[in-house]
Image 1 (tube, rainbow, N blue to C red):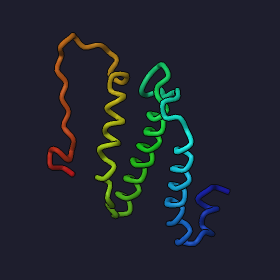
Image 2 (image 1 turned 60 degrees about the vertical axis):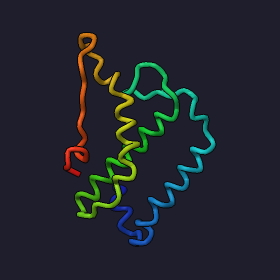
Image 3 (image 1 turned 180 degrees about the horizontal axis):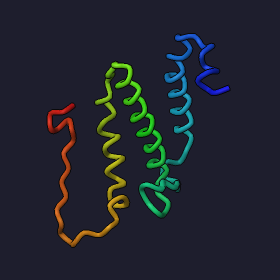
Image 4 (image 1 turned 90 degrees about the vertical axis):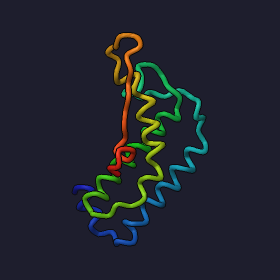
Length: 119
């Protein structure tokens, strides 16, 4: 049985309360870990990075998937509250993602959709 099929027996109240419950569980776990400890985040570095970046990666994945679901359901929500942290996490990985070296001094600029008036 697929997880979606198994979840059909859950009430809407249970389904809508699961994200809140799981967020609390994750928060309690994160409070017990050493955020400066080593972690591997393949899209951000070939060498160990601080654990907080791994946790931020988890947050960005949850945020991005939630936005997909909200867009599909036509329920925009308050995603802007977390957007600065999501973008900061992605920017942290830019040096690794853009490894092909540019000539020294080559300028780089970026404009977010929100800054451009798109969201």
